[in-house]
Length: 91
Image (cartoon, rainbow, N blue to C red; front, side, top):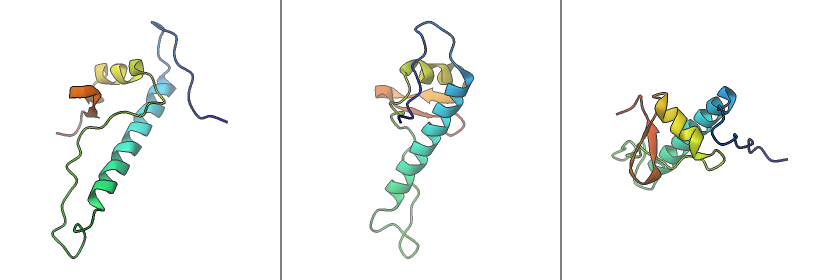
């Protein structure tokens, strides 16, 4: 069974539950990307640990672009160059 939500009708209203799930998926992917970046060799408790420099990511492709554009309009995400998005609350 697939966990991919159905795509909204073009021009139709977006489901608030889909927006919430998309935002949760975005945060999870961003967290995993940052953890992966920070877990490289040479970065750890006994070395000069550093924070990840990842700020923007490509959003999960399970959701259509209309979802991501709506989250930008709501001020939850910021659109970066080349189709990348970042959390609006971070700088």
